[in-house]
Length: 180
Ligand code: CTP
Ligand code: MG
Image (cartoon, rainbow, N blue to C red; front, side, top):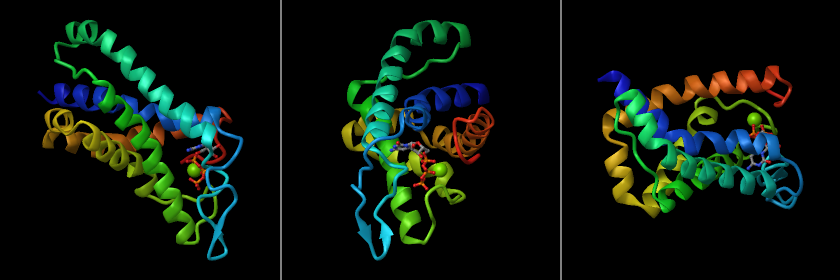
């Protein structure tokens, strides 16, 4: 029972997990805010770029399409019925994850946090909120069917654990400047 909840939660969120990591690898280039300042601080900062956002979104959508192909085999192996991703849901999860992370940077700058500063809880869940909200805007029925309350509960508990672990690995490998 519980393993099915974890499997569905992890599977359904994969297209939202990958964009941030892809953005770290692809980041650089022109910042989205074009250097604009608000109240003496950057609107978003140099850590949010057009290239990172585009590559991150594409990576999430691409992964969703791969998962759609792999679903039957994964379902057979785990005995769990895993959700398929309609294109609007896939795009919503991937782009929403990036948008959530960008919104968090906006909040960080408004609260005096410099680029790279930690913002506990927000850092770990901004992209979950963005992904689920954006997917719901584009395919509400899919989100309601997929993210039942128990699945959503597992997502909220599981995501920070995975986030801390993957960012710790990325930091250790020298891919990321901070371990969060
Ligand atoms: N990145 C990007 N575009 C995005 C998100 C991330 O290019 N939309 C890249 C940037 O190179 C960024 C790195 O991924 O520095 C790490 O992302 P993140 O930790 O979210 O950014 P920070 O640099 O820590 O900046 P902030 O304080 O605004 O979160
Ligand atoms: Mg950071």
